[in-house]
Image (cartoon, rainbow, N blue to C red; front, side, top):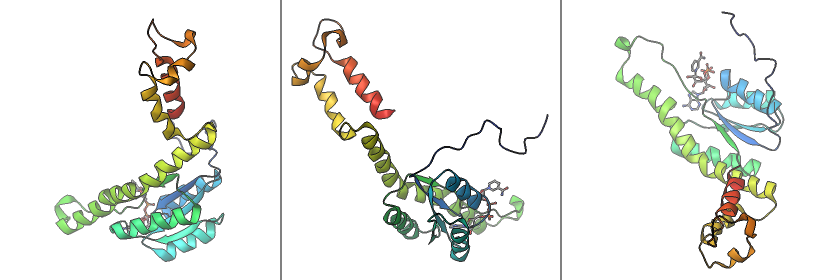
Length: 200
Ligand SMILES: NC(=O)c1ccc[n+]([C@@H]2O[C@H](COP(=O)([O-])OP(=O)(O)OC[C@H]3O[C@@H](n4cnc5c(N)ncnc54)[C@H](O)[C@@H]3O)[C@@H](O)[C@H]2O)c1
C-alpha cells in the first residue's frame, strides 16, 4: 500500500478568518506547525509554552499578530492567566489546541513513578486544565457567532421557545395553521425549526 506523504489534493483549508486559537506547546515541533496552519487559514494564534523564549521566537517568526505567553500546563494559575491574556488580546477565543506534551522514552521497567507522574501531569491533567479554563470563552464565542450570523436576536432568547409550545401561550396565535401538527394548538414544528437553527 502506498504511503501518504502529504495531504490529499482535495484537502482545503478551512476559512478561519476572524477566529482566535490558543496553541499550547506551540513554540516548536508539531505545535508550531499547527500554529502555522491556523494562521494560513486566517486565524490569530496565541502560543502558550513553558519555554517562553521558544514561544517568543515562534511568534516573531509567524507574525500576523501572534502572541507568546509563558505557561506551564502543570499550573492552573498559569493556564488561567494564559487564557485570560489571549481573551484580552483577541477580544475572545474560538479554539484551543492541547498540544503541549512530553515523552520519556524508556521501557516501563526503567520508568520511575515520578517520571510517570510528570508525563501524566503534563499530557493528561494539563489537557484537562487547559480545556476547563478555555471552554467558557470558546462557548461564548460560539454563541456570539450564532448571534451575528442569525441577526435575529440573541440565541439564548430562544429558551423561550420551550414555553411557547405550551397550549395557550400567546405565541400559539402566530403559528400558521399549516405548520401545526394534529388538532391541538401545538407549535412543535416551529419549535423544532428554531432549535435546529440554533444548533446549526
Ligand atoms: N513527535 C511525535 O512523534 C509525537 C507522537 C505522538 C504524540 N506526540 C505529541 O504531540 C505533541 C507535540 O510533540 P512534538 O514532537 O512537537 O514535541 P516537542 O517536544 O518538539 O514540543 C513540545 C512543546 O511543548 C512544550 N511543553 C512541554 N512541556 C510543557 C508544559 N509543561 N507546559 C507548556 N508547554 C510545554 C515544549 O516547550 C515544546 O515547545 C506532544 O504532546 C507529544 O506528546 C508527538
